[in-house]
Image (tube, rainbow, N blue to C red; front, side, top):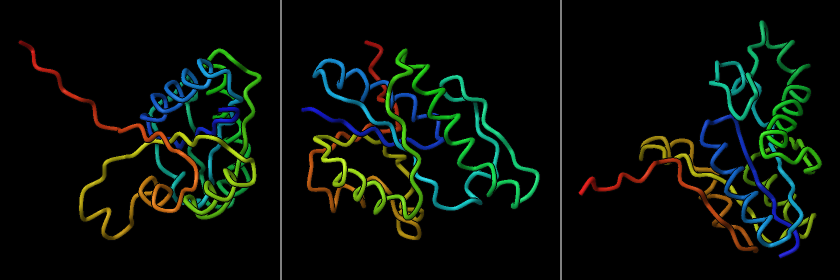
Length: 157
């Protein structure tokens, strides 16, 4: 494998996704590209817990949100690279429908593996909105590593 794309959002599980994908890439001596897709400005107008050293932002209005979205996404990706201890990681901000944009970018970049998380939403959420990881997996032409959001509970015995 020569190129691994790691797709992250602002969910706290993105830390696990980034760390797992990066560790795998380093073991395989592969190039790493971390991407974030901006799709709906309203998605960013809510508070987020700090992730990998990135504190997040809350826009005071939609106009400010639209202006600063790319800058803040860039700050998030830079913080992620710093958290991983490799500020030379290539980071890319994309715009569009999340699943389609990730698939298109992976094809364009000739990626060998795509790493992303699954948020394990409820059945109703999946029915009404869908799951990005499932959509990407359904149409992917390259191998994928999907990192589950839920923690596995181990027996105490």
